[in-house]
Length: 139
Image (cartoon, rainbow, N blue to C red; front, side, top):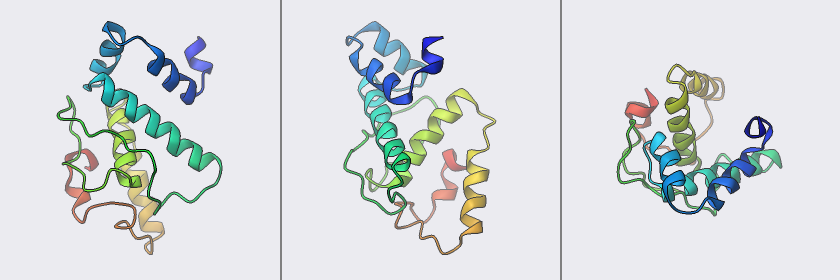
């Protein structure tokens, strides 16, 4: 019950504070990640959440926190990103986690709908590669 009322930042810090070992690896393994990648991804999501919560510009921002690139994952992920400090990479991480816990999520459809509603948005400035819609993760 404690985890249900904890903030995502608190959950991220709790994961970070776990001693390196079986518990950290077990949680990360559930998502098909290493514990170091898991920690960096959680930290990056918290950072982006804070940018949004404080109404800062995110869409074309160069992020100061760099999420690690996994060597391999259990679920489909994007090809090696060109820039891990853009919002595309963080959105791909969020989508990866969503796919792990709810493969029927509607994130991609809602995101594409939002882009269609605002066609002047420059996805390249967000770090999206030209063929991002062909990535298995983003289908």
